[in-house]
Length: 289
Image (cartoon, rainbow, N blue to C red):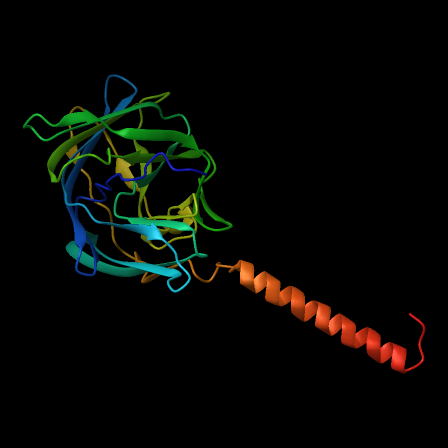
C-alpha cells in the first residue's frame, strides 16, 4: 500500500497533546493540541476543531553495504484524564528499520493520525489555517478497512467501523495552526471515535504505520473518545487508564536480507563444490551415477 500521507503532520489526540520527535543532532517535531467536537443537534453532521503546533523532523536515505539500519527516536506527551483526574503521560520509543543495500528508507514525523469512525460517517472535509495567510485542505483518506502497521501485519477496523487517515501537506512550514474536520452521519447521535498516534516507516516503496500511542494491535484494546450531540463545540478528553505506549517499533525482526551479486556467485561455487564431492564419493564407492 503506497501512502498518500508521506511528509504529513500528526496533530491531535485527547484534550491536549504534546509530541516531540527527535533524531540525533538533526531535527525534531513538537505538536501541542486542544481538541473540541460536536454532533450537530439539528443536522446529522459532526465537527472536530483543534489548534496545533508543528515543528518538522525527518530522516531518509538509501541503505548501503556497510549501513543497513536506520533509527529514529520519538517522545509523545499526552494530557488527558486518569482515574477521573488530570494527567500527563510521556511515551518514548525508538523506531528501527533495516533494509538491503540500495533500498530506500524514510522515517518521518510527517505521518497521519489514524482514526476509527462509524461506517456511516462520510463526506469528510478538513482545513488548516495559521491565521497569517497559510491555509489549505487537510489530506483525508476514508473508508479504509485496514492499515498496514508492519510487514504482514495490519490494524483492522472493528465491525461497523472504518478507518480514516488525516494528514497535512508536507510543504507546510513550521507554526501554529487551527484545524477543522467535518463529516456527515446517517442519523443524529453521539458517536465513538478511536484515535491512534502512529509513526510512518517507508522501506523500499512499502509504507507502514506502526502504532505508538496507544501501543495496540487491534482497536478492541483501546478506549473511545465520545463526540456528543451538542448545540456548540465541547471539550473532548481521552481517558488514559490502561493506555501504554510502544517503546520499540522494530522493523528489523521481519527483515530478510538478500544476497549481493558476489554472495550469489560464492553460494553457486559452494553448491557446485559440494555436489562434485558428493558425486566423487559415490563413484569411489562403486555406485553408478
